[in-house]
Length: 192
Image 1 (cartoon, rainbow, N blue to C red):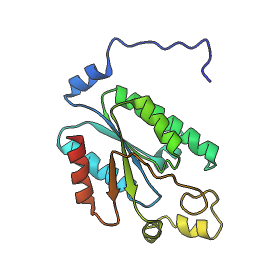
Image 2 (image 1 turned 90 degrees about the horizontal axis):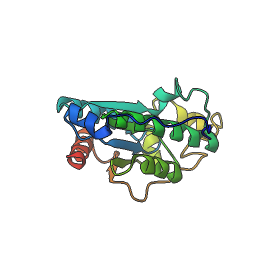
Image 3 (image 1 turned 135 degrees about the vertical axis):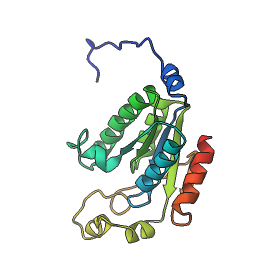
Protein backbone atom coordinates (compact mmCIF):
# COMPACT_ATOMS: atom_id res chain seq x y z
CA UNK A 1 0.00 0.00 0.00
CA UNK A 2 1.37 3.39 -1.00
CA UNK A 3 1.67 6.03 1.71
CA UNK A 4 -0.70 8.99 1.30
CA UNK A 5 2.39 11.20 1.65
CA UNK A 6 3.97 9.86 -1.56
CA UNK A 7 3.10 11.57 -4.83
CA UNK A 8 4.04 10.62 -8.40
CA UNK A 9 6.34 13.19 -10.00
CA UNK A 10 5.83 13.42 -13.75
CA UNK A 11 8.88 13.67 -15.99
CA UNK A 12 9.03 16.16 -18.83
CA UNK A 13 10.18 13.30 -21.05
CA UNK A 14 7.92 10.46 -22.12
CA UNK A 15 8.67 6.84 -22.92
CA UNK A 16 8.11 7.73 -26.56
CA UNK A 17 10.71 10.53 -26.31
CA UNK A 18 13.25 8.11 -24.89
CA UNK A 19 12.51 5.40 -27.45
CA UNK A 20 12.79 7.97 -30.25
CA UNK A 21 16.21 9.03 -28.92
CA UNK A 22 17.25 5.35 -29.01
CA UNK A 23 15.69 5.01 -32.50
CA UNK A 24 13.63 2.01 -31.53
CA UNK A 25 10.10 0.96 -30.70
CA UNK A 26 10.39 -0.81 -27.40
CA UNK A 27 8.42 -3.68 -25.91
CA UNK A 28 8.31 -5.92 -22.85
CA UNK A 29 8.73 -9.55 -23.90
CA UNK A 30 7.65 -11.82 -21.02
CA UNK A 31 8.88 -15.42 -21.26
CA UNK A 32 6.91 -17.83 -19.08
CA UNK A 33 7.18 -21.60 -18.72
CA UNK A 34 8.46 -24.36 -16.49
CA UNK A 35 11.96 -24.47 -15.05
CA UNK A 36 14.21 -25.90 -17.75
CA UNK A 37 11.88 -25.00 -20.62
CA UNK A 38 14.44 -22.66 -22.17
CA UNK A 39 13.18 -19.22 -21.14
CA UNK A 40 16.59 -17.78 -20.27
CA UNK A 41 18.33 -19.44 -23.22
CA UNK A 42 15.80 -17.97 -25.63
CA UNK A 43 15.76 -14.54 -23.97
CA UNK A 44 19.55 -14.26 -24.16
CA UNK A 45 19.62 -15.47 -27.78
CA UNK A 46 16.94 -12.88 -28.64
CA UNK A 47 18.89 -10.23 -26.72
CA UNK A 48 21.97 -10.93 -28.88
CA UNK A 49 19.94 -10.88 -32.12
CA UNK A 50 18.30 -7.57 -31.16
CA UNK A 51 21.63 -6.08 -30.08
CA UNK A 52 23.07 -7.01 -33.49
CA UNK A 53 20.18 -5.04 -35.04
CA UNK A 54 20.97 -1.99 -32.87
CA UNK A 55 18.14 -2.47 -30.35
CA UNK A 56 19.00 -1.63 -26.75
CA UNK A 57 17.66 -4.35 -24.46
CA UNK A 58 17.93 -5.60 -20.92
CA UNK A 59 17.12 -9.10 -19.67
CA UNK A 60 15.57 -9.66 -16.25
CA UNK A 61 16.19 -13.29 -15.30
CA UNK A 62 14.35 -14.97 -12.42
CA UNK A 63 17.42 -16.45 -10.74
CA UNK A 64 19.44 -13.25 -11.16
CA UNK A 65 16.73 -11.04 -9.64
CA UNK A 66 16.45 -13.42 -6.68
CA UNK A 67 20.13 -12.79 -5.92
CA UNK A 68 19.38 -9.14 -5.14
CA UNK A 69 16.04 -7.35 -5.31
CA UNK A 70 14.01 -10.46 -4.42
CA UNK A 71 16.56 -12.27 -2.25
CA UNK A 72 14.15 -12.12 0.69
CA UNK A 73 11.40 -14.06 -1.10
CA UNK A 74 10.74 -17.78 -1.00
CA UNK A 75 8.52 -19.86 -3.26
CA UNK A 76 5.18 -19.84 -1.45
CA UNK A 77 2.24 -18.65 -3.56
CA UNK A 78 2.37 -15.29 -1.75
CA UNK A 79 6.10 -14.88 -2.34
CA UNK A 80 5.72 -15.85 -6.00
CA UNK A 81 3.03 -13.20 -6.39
CA UNK A 82 5.27 -10.56 -4.80
CA UNK A 83 8.23 -11.72 -6.93
CA UNK A 84 6.23 -11.08 -10.12
CA UNK A 85 4.78 -7.81 -8.80
CA UNK A 86 8.27 -6.46 -8.13
CA UNK A 87 9.78 -7.60 -11.41
CA UNK A 88 6.77 -6.21 -13.27
CA UNK A 89 7.43 -2.81 -11.70
CA UNK A 90 11.14 -3.02 -12.59
CA UNK A 91 10.27 -4.04 -16.16
CA UNK A 92 7.97 -1.00 -16.37
CA UNK A 93 10.82 1.30 -15.30
CA UNK A 94 13.16 -0.12 -17.96
CA UNK A 95 10.33 0.07 -20.51
CA UNK A 96 9.67 3.71 -19.58
CA UNK A 97 13.40 4.33 -20.14
CA UNK A 98 12.91 3.25 -23.76
CA UNK A 99 14.56 -0.17 -23.59
CA UNK A 100 13.17 -3.42 -24.90
CA UNK A 101 12.87 -5.56 -21.79
CA UNK A 102 13.15 -9.34 -21.91
CA UNK A 103 11.76 -10.98 -18.78
CA UNK A 104 12.25 -14.70 -18.11
CA UNK A 105 10.38 -15.86 -15.03
CA UNK A 106 8.40 -19.05 -14.48
CA UNK A 107 5.55 -16.76 -13.37
CA UNK A 108 3.19 -19.69 -12.76
CA UNK A 109 -0.02 -17.77 -12.05
CA UNK A 110 -2.10 -16.23 -14.85
CA UNK A 111 -3.41 -13.45 -12.60
CA UNK A 112 0.14 -12.23 -11.89
CA UNK A 113 1.07 -12.19 -15.58
CA UNK A 114 -2.22 -10.44 -16.38
CA UNK A 115 -1.44 -7.78 -13.77
CA UNK A 116 1.89 -7.06 -15.48
CA UNK A 117 0.15 -7.01 -18.88
CA UNK A 118 -2.21 -4.35 -17.52
CA UNK A 119 0.72 -2.38 -16.06
CA UNK A 120 2.65 -2.32 -19.35
CA UNK A 121 -0.26 -2.09 -21.76
CA UNK A 122 -0.19 -2.68 -25.53
CA UNK A 123 3.56 -3.31 -25.66
CA UNK A 124 3.43 -6.38 -23.39
CA UNK A 125 4.19 -9.56 -25.32
CA UNK A 126 3.65 -12.85 -23.51
CA UNK A 127 5.73 -15.75 -24.83
CA UNK A 128 4.82 -19.19 -23.54
CA UNK A 129 7.85 -21.47 -23.72
CA UNK A 130 5.85 -24.67 -23.89
CA UNK A 131 7.93 -27.70 -22.98
CA UNK A 132 6.72 -30.96 -21.44
CA UNK A 133 7.79 -31.46 -17.84
CA UNK A 134 9.51 -34.72 -18.85
CA UNK A 135 11.79 -32.81 -21.24
CA UNK A 136 12.42 -30.09 -18.63
CA UNK A 137 13.50 -32.82 -16.22
CA UNK A 138 15.95 -34.21 -18.80
CA UNK A 139 17.47 -30.73 -19.16
CA UNK A 140 17.63 -30.20 -15.38
CA UNK A 141 21.20 -28.90 -15.09
CA UNK A 142 20.57 -27.62 -11.56
CA UNK A 143 19.11 -30.90 -10.27
CA UNK A 144 15.98 -29.13 -9.03
CA UNK A 145 13.42 -31.60 -10.37
CA UNK A 146 15.29 -34.48 -8.76
CA UNK A 147 15.30 -32.65 -5.42
CA UNK A 148 11.60 -31.78 -5.77
CA UNK A 149 10.67 -35.38 -6.57
CA UNK A 150 12.67 -36.50 -3.53
CA UNK A 151 10.72 -34.06 -1.34
CA UNK A 152 13.75 -31.82 -0.73
CA UNK A 153 12.17 -28.81 -2.47
CA UNK A 154 8.67 -27.72 -1.51
CA UNK A 155 6.45 -25.67 -3.85
CA UNK A 156 8.36 -26.55 -7.03
CA UNK A 157 6.36 -25.59 -10.13
CA UNK A 158 5.41 -28.56 -12.27
CA UNK A 159 6.05 -31.11 -9.52
CA UNK A 160 4.31 -30.07 -6.30
CA UNK A 161 3.11 -26.57 -7.22
CA UNK A 162 0.82 -25.58 -10.11
CA UNK A 163 1.62 -23.88 -13.40
CA UNK A 164 -1.19 -22.07 -15.22
CA UNK A 165 -0.35 -22.06 -18.92
CA UNK A 166 -1.24 -18.86 -20.76
CA UNK A 167 -4.51 -18.95 -22.69
CA UNK A 168 -3.78 -15.88 -24.84
CA UNK A 169 -0.01 -15.67 -25.26
CA UNK A 170 1.12 -13.68 -28.27
CA UNK A 171 3.53 -16.49 -29.12
CA UNK A 172 3.88 -20.14 -28.11
CA UNK A 173 7.32 -21.67 -28.63
CA UNK A 174 7.59 -25.47 -28.49
CA UNK A 175 11.16 -25.59 -27.22
CA UNK A 176 11.32 -29.40 -27.26
CA UNK A 177 10.50 -29.39 -30.99
CA UNK A 178 12.11 -26.17 -32.25
CA UNK A 179 15.79 -25.27 -31.93
CA UNK A 180 16.95 -21.92 -30.55
CA UNK A 181 17.47 -20.38 -33.99
CA UNK A 182 13.93 -21.25 -35.09
CA UNK A 183 12.49 -19.83 -31.87
CA UNK A 184 14.50 -16.61 -32.23
CA UNK A 185 13.35 -16.29 -35.83
CA UNK A 186 9.72 -16.52 -34.64
CA UNK A 187 10.39 -13.92 -31.96
CA UNK A 188 12.04 -11.50 -34.40
CA UNK A 189 9.13 -11.91 -36.81
CA UNK A 190 6.68 -11.09 -34.03
CA UNK A 191 8.68 -8.01 -33.00
CA UNK A 192 9.13 -6.71 -36.57
